[in-house]
Image (cartoon, rainbow, N blue to C red; front, top):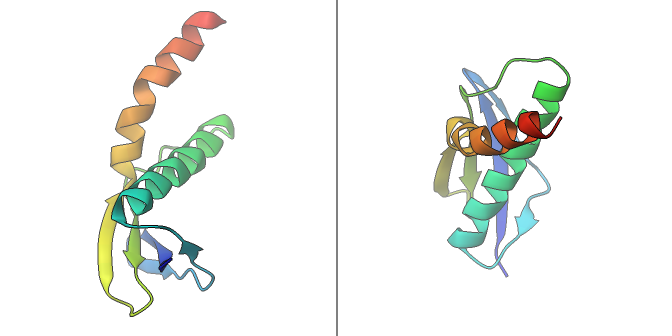
Length: 90
């Protein structure tokens, strides 16, 4: 199974992922990026921090080829319905 590295981009700063994650292919890479970005955004919201829509993952394979750029704005957009539902339950 190939290993993918989820480097974290914040404007000009890049935090490299040196460990990576074994995933079966691009669909799993996208799902993992979405889930991880949602988790980071949700933790930030719970901590009173702004939504990190300007951030992204730059995902590379073992040969260091860029396979996907995943903007956190995609995850933030998919969080909106869940946030609205949870507010109505309180």
